[in-house]
Length: 211
Image (cartoon, rainbow, N blue to C red; front, side, top):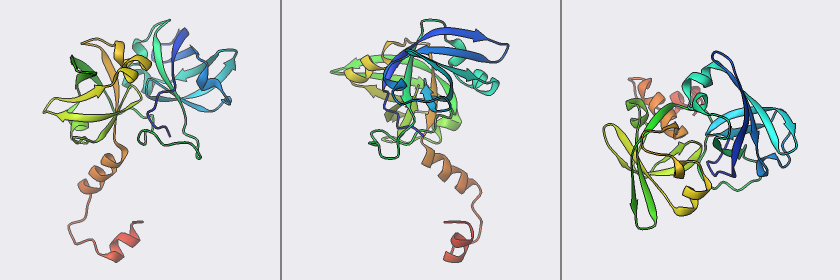
């Protein structure tokens, strides 16, 4: 589990590609502190397992499901990537609950400066927009952001200068793809409502179904 507060930008030091898989070696500093083989690190919003560690770098595997369902397959050597270690149980919860399980890929439609902010319109699949609300949270390339506007085909978020400078999203251009993870609670509510019983949900029903 992650919070969407990026700890540092890493850099790809090497990629071994298969037909539908990858092994990535990533240069980093902060996220390597106290990290062990088998720990989880969010890379561009994707929860990946550390398979090897050496001085100033770590390696992760990308399986076919992740290869086809995220932007990781488009990365190349020297690409910058957002990095965050899994949240410690006694750590500060600065963003929102982020699982690191990408729901879909979006595309940047427009970037427009406004005072000290950069507003970014991102096209997203309809099913992800249905799980989103204005003033709700969304993880974009692993960054916890607030949704300011919603339309039929896109959502809008805003970056302050710090976030733009400390993450990969600030340097992405119109047409670039981004990993999207919608709010976990919204997905649970949607799932529950889709399968909600027709009869009233009394206390006995809720107790029997674990609520």
